[in-house]
Length: 189
Image (cartoon, rainbow, N blue to C red; front, side, top):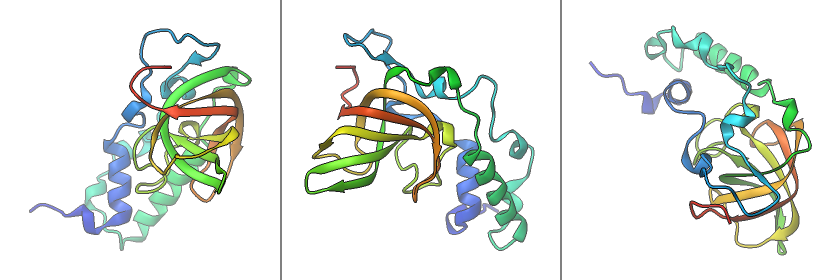
């Protein structure tokens, strides 16, 4: 008998995080050097070597839990706590970097988008639970930018800072200041 996890949102979210990569989509930067002063990085650079946020959950038989089981909610709370307190890479603090990702809008007006979260895979923070804090960057654009919408794929560049900040959409571990966002086209501009 097959279990339908689509009707079990808490368990489905946890199983999806266990099965899916933390770094997907346009998150892998091309190997070619960019003709700018920004260092191209990937999402893997933002995660300390050897850190596995899901290690504790891998041996569990999560498919046997129901969303109605109190243990399921306790596991989700435990996972969220681990993700929100994910370790950061302090050596990146102050570096001028560029990386691709997806837009989760935070603040904007008629002039354009001013702040957004940059996430490594489509749907993060909107259609799925937020990834670990070390996989979310709070982007502060240098100038309001028009035309950016939720889940647009972009290259974001600016000065990266280690700065854990909560938002309604998730806990970010990094901040990108004086940033620029350009449409992702598969290659650096």
